Structure formats: C-alpha cells, structure tokens
Image 1 (tube, each protein chain N blue to C red):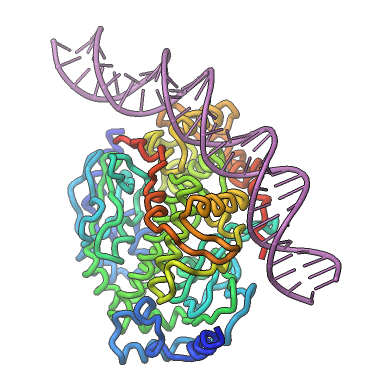
Image 2 (image 1 turned 60 degrees about the horizontal axis):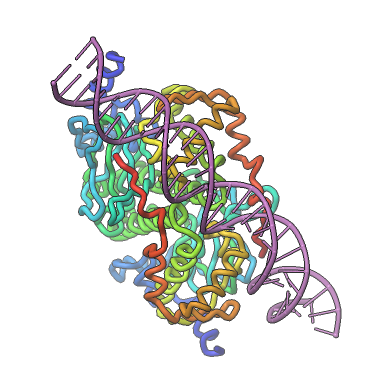
Length: 253
Length: 253
DNA sequence: CGAGTAGTTGACGATTGTCAAGATGGGTGG
DNA sequence: CCACCCATCTTGACAATCGTCAACTACTCG
C-alpha cells in the first residue's frame, strides 16, 4: 500500500513517454518525437483531493483534462443543489470534450479521491494536431469513442431494467480496471451508492437492494466499497437481458 | 406542395457554397475558397427512399453522411429483429461520427422519408482538415456537439419521467425545425409512435396516451403525424420538471 | 467519543409497462 | 373509384418494477 502510493506520486511527474497509460491515452500510436512535442504542452499539476473541482459548469473552456491516477466524476448540477452524475472517469480517460462547441463547460467535474490529472491547453493541442496527422487522428478517435460510449449508455438507460443496468456498470468498471492493469475481479468503488444511482437513473435504495441481491445470488461479494466479481458470466447473461421482456419489442419500419 | 418538392430536388444538386444549410453544417465559418475544396470531396447522390439504409451496424466505415433534405434515424438492431432507436437526424446533421474509433459502424442508419444525403469520404476530409484549420476546428465542434447532445439525452433518460421526455422531444424538434427555416409550431413527424417510444425509453402506449393528454391539456394539437404546438411555455415548464420530484434528490459529496 | 453521513432494509404506492381489443387511415387491387 | 386489408394508433384494465418514506445500523472523521 505504501509502495503503491510512492509509485503513484512518481507517476505524477513522468512525461507521456514514460507514462504507463500511453497505450490508451493521447500518445497512442504516436512516433517518439511526436510524443515529445505533445509532452511539451502538457501541464502536470500537484495531486488533487477528494471534492476538488477540475472545472464547473459554465466555466470558460481552455483545457482538456486527462486522469492520470485516481478517479473523477462529471455531473450536471441542478438549481436546488442536486446533481445528475454523467460519468465516472478512470486513468487515461479524457474529460472536457463537450466544451469545444461553445468554449464553455456544459458540466462540472470533481475528483472522487486523491487524483493526479494532466491538463492540455486545447488551442495548442489543436495546432499541434494540425501538424501531426497521427495525433489528429487519435483526437478524432478519442472523440468518436466518447460518442460511442455515450450511445452505449443511452441504450442502457433506454431499455434496460435496474438489474441489467447495475450488472453492466460493474462489468464496465471491471473491464476498464483490467485494461489499466488492475484486478478485474477485486476492486474498490470510489463513488457512493447515491452517485451510482444517479448515474444509472435509479434510486439509492434500488442500488443498495441490488447489491445485496447480487451477493445473495452469488454473483459478487460486496463489502461497502469493496467489490469482488464472483460469477462474471452470470453478470454478463444478466446484461444480455435474460430476464428482459421489453427487448422482445419490435420497432417496425 | 408540388413547389416544395421541386425546390427539394434542386437542392440535391447544389454545391455546399449554395446550400441553405451552410450555416449549420460543415462549411460554417469557412472561407469561400475552402468551401470549394470541401465541395470537391463531397459526393451527392440520388435521393433515397423510405426504408433505404445509409449503412448497417458492423459495415466498414468510409464515409460520414450529412442529411440534406428529409430525415434519417439511427438505431441499434437486436438479434430478435427489435430496434433501439438512437437518434433522429434532420437536414444539416452529421451521421457516422461514432464509427471513426474502430473503422466500423456501431449502429444502422435508415431514412424515414424520401431524403437527400451528402457523403463525405472521411480520410479525404481528415486530410483536408489538416490543411484548413477552420475546417479542422469545425469538425471538432461538430463532434463536440454530438457529445453534448448525447449528454443531454442521458439526463433526459436518467431522471425525467415520461411526460417530461415527450415534452422535451417535441421542443427539440420544434427548435431544430425553426433553425432550418421551417415552422416551429406546425410540423409533421416522420417517425412512428413506436420509434418515438423506443427513442425515449417508453412503450408505444405511453407515448400515445401522452399525446392525447397533451392535447386535452391544450399544449398541442395532434392529428396523427401532424403536430401543432399551442402552448410552448406550458411544454417548457413541463420539461423544467414542475411536477418532477426525483429532481429534488441530492447526490451529496 | 460523538455526530453526522452513507448504507441497508421494510412497507407502500405510483408510474409505466403489458396484454388485449378496437378504431383509424393509407395503400392496393379488383 | 371503391372496398378491403393491414399496419398504426388509441384506449382500457391490470400488474410489476421501482421510487418514496421511514426507521435503523454502521462507518468515518473531527
């Protein structure tokens, strides 16, 4: 644990070329000299702490952010102080792409735990991309991925029931942890039940009940924030909609 | 009516520089000579008819598509022949951006009525964008808009009830028609009740009931596909969640 | 150690989906 | 040109999922 912390803090300072996330982040597919040019515009800040904001809704847009370690949530604040959670972001994931349109952030971003975050001035990134085709392409790919991911989420919210949503959520986290070199079967949630519910369009109580039910059914072991995936296939067949009847509907012509 | 048709068909052939959509499509903000370069790579096809596909899920990706006249739906087919509608696309809107990631279309696209569609070979567009900064920026903006729009839809599906969803849908169409020079208060739906329901995550019957209720409450006039917005403000206050209680929830910390 | 927040569990009700039957209208063929 | 047919839409009755309210437990953090 102490070891992990030290490694994390060293990571904060490392340039893209030495960063373990290079294969899923912006540098993916870039030639070494182009990575250096990218490195030159990346700002690396001190670690942020739980509750710190990367930006708030309506802030003017200057930088994209990439999570390096830790996790971040994006959310839409509502007048009455409520929050609709829009996404959870793990290391290597880019935040802020929706702000290019109006040069203004459409949502807020807050770190969920002590996290390191890289900052990329978008205007300089855009200039660099114009001169580095592989970077330009990678930017398009990352934006495309954001669109595809959100489309996937639309399907989840549009036609899946509570149980399918939570199962899909757990599997998504599992897969993302795996790609980042963490265990895919044993991890800690950095977000609250309430935040999970908000993200999945469910009440806290429903999330809580589902966790206990999944545990009773032997799909997972849950101990507050600590999750162990016991029966991955079971979860997958839930997502596939084994019990989903709305699926059968047709939307003809 | 005959007049409208003739105008539509003339539109099909016009180059970007003469196209009435130039202010909301790719050419927005481009210098005239750059619009000509863009024109050079745009393919303009014969009109498509109801039910024709632009592409199907898993097709390999070569072109982006822009609706010129008519309307198109994107949807995710499911094994059993069902469809989950992902979006409805009006003139000036780009389709296919989610396919850049894997060079493969993640959904299918089908025209809802006789429509004209422009085709843009993405690799040539990418090359051109690298040499025309304003085009590159416009491409980023359009992708950003796609992300922002989907985020908006996530909020709709995540925390709005049936009535709020349908009201938001009608207002969205109204606004989009207005920007395109059509009436914002009197229009025809090119999609079925079933497709609306699929898009909004509701059963057909719920959509149908809501239409009659909205009409009874004097918000709209509905006559099958013909919609007239009577009380725009009433619809807006519905969307704002006048009756929505889930809104009051907090997602603390 | 105490207070407040997060999580769990139970009881209940409302919204919305499901099933079924009927109405409407557009399209086609005689 | 009319009539029939089939898909779409509407309406009603019922049921189930999931949200709401409430009480209680268990952490976490000063």
